[in-house]
Length: 130
Image 1 (cartoon, rainbow, N blue to C red):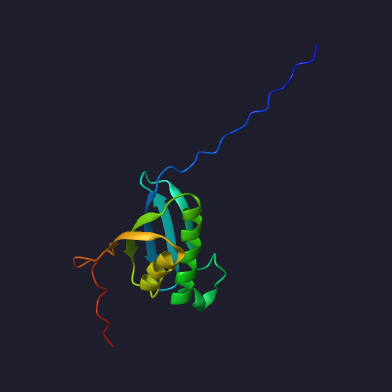
Image 2 (image 1 turned 120 degrees about the vertical axis):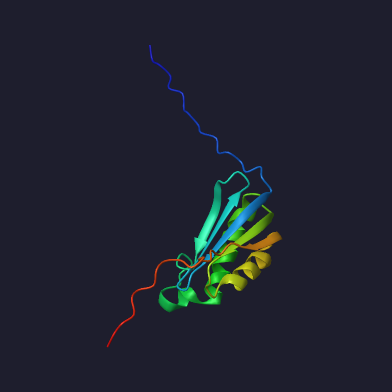
């Protein structure tokens, strides 16, 4: 008697959400874009370094726009068409990455700045006496 072996197939879950949240983290050296659905699962992400930019070119606005378009195209293919944008950081790619999301076809419903500001922060180092 020969036993028949069943093939186990794993079905991929389809994205049913049409809304998402875009997190843009713009530092002075790079721009990182993460797109999540409403439950918090990461749908797509990108950065200027992933798009092929190296060194000082990663900090450019063009690199930020390219990274935003790449991440937006991935999430549009998965079914997310509308998103809220939360921007954090002081980098040069803040505004151009939002424009890149719009150029890729993502509809933006909200733009919010979530950059943290210190309320006096850490203690300053003592003054240098020369």
